[in-house]
Image 1 (tube, rainbow, N blue to C red):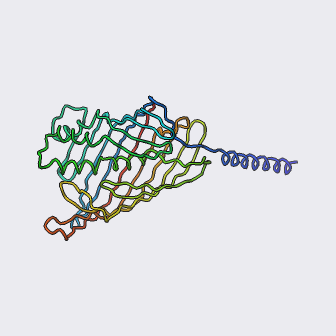
Image 2 (cartoon, rainbow, N blue to C red):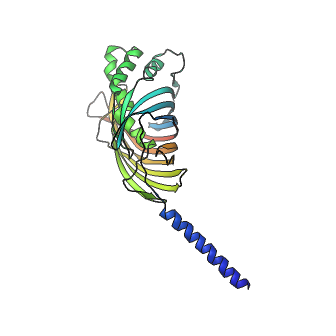
Image 3 (cartoon, rainbow, N blue to C red):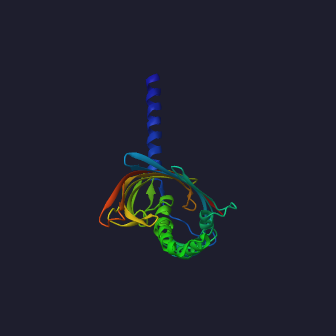
Length: 313
């Protein structure tokens, strides 16, 4: 009798396992961002980026810690895309390198040039056009914000153009589009099963003229939550001249990997939280100001960890 019971039990276990796999494999999720006029999404970021430059064999580390809060409001919905009104509510930044440091807190009473600069960025509205698959079509309205920032900081006329180009490269539409693409997953046009995968390639401009090959996977899903992962390959275009800061021109030649994990609200398609880890390595190539044809190549590696929390109003 015991062998019979054992065989029945084994059969039931095997059947249950097969049924569970069948159930998971047949679960499909039509991933899309849901837009409703008046909806608001608050995005809180906490990140730390460490850059290590090899200067004549001596490693120099620069650390940038950033905390900011952005509010996105859906103001118009048209077919498969929406207009979002965006504004930074608060920005905190701590940048340190060697014996130098810069601290910004837009909620403080500090009136130094850096705080005046970034305080003028908060509360200002700009526009994001976003498709239901997560692609950012365009970002507008930042140019006037940069003018207000420069005016509020009291920068001398001879330095305004240099500062504006730097702001555009670091915080302009293309740079912001690349940042948002890391935290707002791209969704395919067809439903996805658990363990299903899809890809997309993203091009960005700004300080990083680059392309990112994203490899997405739906690792878990039910009516309450969906989990995604992204393993991306990143590569800059080292032929594109960029502003390296302080009026210095040059090129960025970096490659590396970006990994992300996302929790998605099935009812809205929007993330509730995500974390990303980035590791890049290569060279910063500075154009020698004393010799336009000469170049200074500086080995660099970049490590960045970031977390984002979303709140739906």
